[in-house]
Length: 201
Image (cartoon, rainbow, N blue to C red; front, side, top):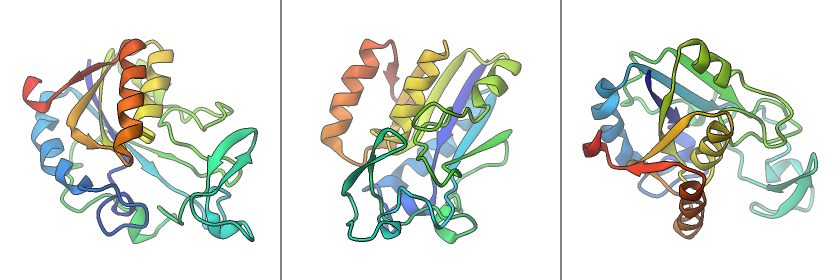
């Protein structure tokens, strides 16, 4: 089954948001156009409690984008973003979620961050996404969303480890840091991920 995995198209990752991805809103019409090409449609949603330890505001004397160790993992301290039930955590209003069959929420454990849609950053707890996809006989996973070099990247890495065939739709995603994206793209290619444009679907 051909499956589209939509990663975190939420207001806080869009222009004007707390952790905006430059030109992130430009992917929305692309995503809406390609939905019809897929048999199954799943979305992930960053969903943090206010006291999440990945937020710089919850560490005295620390600034945004400082680095610490959190649960034995390197952790960037982010601006407060995608707080549960906030406007910033909502999906963009123009995003067509009519046929989404599952929304996987992540980042809910205050003690550890969760970039991937499959596991937290320490691989201590599964979100259940891999099991859901297997139950639905999903084989080919196509990824889009925000940001290409962080949550999309980590989601694809985990999906490849889980044995899925993976593709990134490049014009349906944007990186937070373009330089980092070039590095992770090379890594994902080496691991077997394919890259294509929406027009190639």
